[in-house]
Image (cartoon, rainbow, N blue to C red):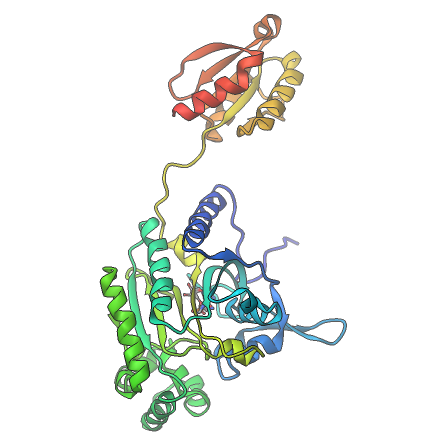
Length: 417
Ligand code: HAM
């Protein structure tokens, strides 16, 4: 029987994995520039971290978690997102002790039992940042800027959509108004929205079922319900974004699929993509740290979906395919080729050689296929003279190089390109 990977997962193979690595490295280098340090978290947490953090009434917690009981009878869940885990670690390790704010970034796989489609998987990868400990609009504006800069670096066009979901003072009145409004849509809404309308009406606003689109479009917006403090906070975020020349659109029905958000929420959407158009999303979550047992600590952050970024075809500079292929002409040269490639690799040069005893012509083809820009040729003549022939694969030119100078000469030729 042919064994396949689990539904909704994918294998990322070379050379695609090279593009992935470079995109992720661009992101993490950018995050460090903005003062974020990496946090490496377990991919599983006790289930209650997500149930309490993300919210019992969310689709993620109700339907999408990979949850299991371990041999000790503990209830564990593969993380569907990382923010709750970051907040858990923040509380557990008293990260506030060294002063606030604490700025963290992470990368890695997340797991949600969703129906797979283009841009939606059961295992997917996120890059994200969390700025913990500041209630100020400048923190919201900073994380939005970091995220926008990431897309700018990759030449990906995105629309920034922004909103405020208010706080415990003003949101209840909005939720009530929404509940009342949803009473009228009993016949047309989907089954899930029937449940949501009762348990958690805000979740109706991010229903993706076609039949519910009209209901969402006619729903009251959040803007008119915000209290003075939330309104001012939101306006200040907008002001800072305008000052930084960031363009955005307000959608006052934008809410997010996780319950921990307060005030600012945002999405970076791909204008070309279909249903799964959010390439990144985030917002403020002022109650999450307290919810997980810490002191009241305001926070904000975002996560980028790597698979969706890759589908948007990020622009990367010419690949780093430079390197050298060591060719043995004749069996007598194979041992020499083996040791020579080892020495070149020790010098930090990307090097490969033939392991299938191929003909010189076939080795030349392999060098081409691997994107090597130089080859070192070792034949009888070279063995007798104690030197090598270095060939520039693109120009077709060749030169003789002494064995002792080989690594330095190769490095020099590669840098010149
Ligand atoms: P989220 O909106 O659930 O937010 O996910 C963030 C991003 O992850 C989405 O915009 C999307 O690009 C990607 N994503 C989500 N689900 C899938 C999936 N099934 N397949 C592929 N990509 C997916 C969060 O996760 C929050 N933790 C964001 C945050 C950080 N808020 C504050 N800090």
